[in-house]
Length: 246
Picture 1 (cartoon, rainbow, N blue to C red):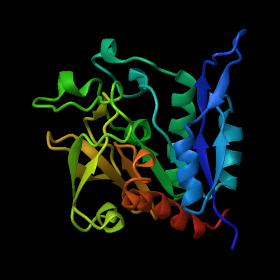
Picture 2: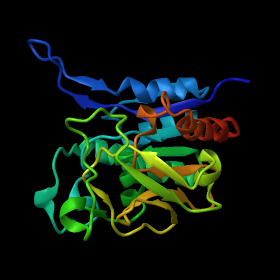
Picture 3: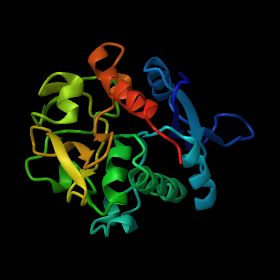
């Protein structure tokens, strides 16, 4: 059986070359995780219009939205734009379209960190622009400087009976935490399936969907030391095997 094609969004990145040669890139950990799980990763560039993106999606068996910078506040009516930084307007446009297409087409979708937030925003939810500032009693979530990316910073409690609990085989897991924003108001059509100790939403599932999962942590940085985390990528790839393209 052919291996499923999993689309991952690449993003613009400055190069260290002189003169500069702008890049479209993606951390290799996402690519390696998809390969390890049995899929074939295909990078989706920025700059494509919606017609071209729809053609890409029609050729895919699954979608993975990776981490990255903040989502523009215009997408969810932000009341604190001063807390938002590192915005890429074209990436917001591309990824919000991909979310809506994946949900409408029932295409398997794994959304990680920023992707988890984009899943919520694209379907009508909102964000805490900065968790530590705006969530009462918040713990530290922004371990993205001075810590290795596999640093386990807090526990996550998973809803019993959820697909996430079934995939990981546990209802409490330790995770890394590399973000400063988080889900505030949940979008219609999503269910919360995991929380951090401070109540922040750490994982969501798309209702009535073969595989639609968003996680706030970075399993691609954990699966080498914690093979259980590879189950999230296996779940995406196995659901993608069942896709009938139309």
